[in-house]
Image 1 (cartoon, one colour):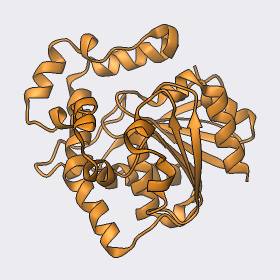
Image 2: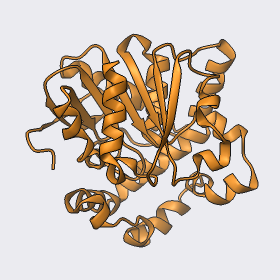
Image 3: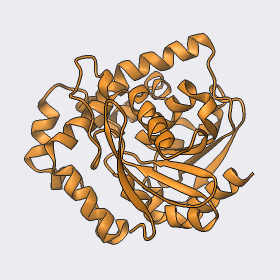
Image 4: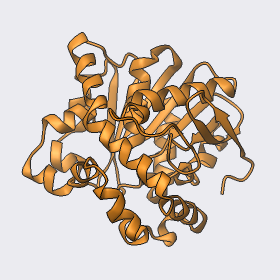
Length: 286
């Protein structure tokens, strides 16, 4: 994976962030979702390099090989605000003050927070398979609670750790034929690590508490995404089924927004890399 890319750890003050980076051109950051690592981009990143971009793929705080502080009682140590600050610090360490930004799933929540907290750092943002966390929570229905029940299970103290760590391979299923063997191996190693599992759960606990409050404060203050935003979603996932057109919802938060669905299951970077890379490259070149 990632032939021609370099790797390093960047110390951000609170976290040690593992990052892959390669290419030569305008910088693009790719943020993965749960329970993946930066390796989920192994098919997309080279395609973007071929299109003339520098591509940076970090493991989010606590995921994969990145490590952050111990969980805080209010979950702020794993808030999207803290993780977004990690990403800005990584990019500055690599020499990039401004960059394009992509986030998938939980990475989309981090990307959204980064654009709100650091608007001068982001030229364009692509948000994949996600809405603002507060929008999800404001739209809870029996269908949402049934299909996304894990959000609320993960928020419980201690019990999720005991359940998942008893048999992480059964809980976190992945197919190496779809993912690619090396990507699968990296994902499997991470999900077998109780420290990683704890951090991933803290991500969700923060989402229902401190992250939701931050978004509600932004909404009350009228804070919006000012840079161009591309909204993408997997047509064989349930985002559109639950909410209708995601672009319509994002227009309440973003000034310049457009988007469309991609013929894929949820892990679009692994299942439809050509289509995803083309959509991203065209948007960032425009």
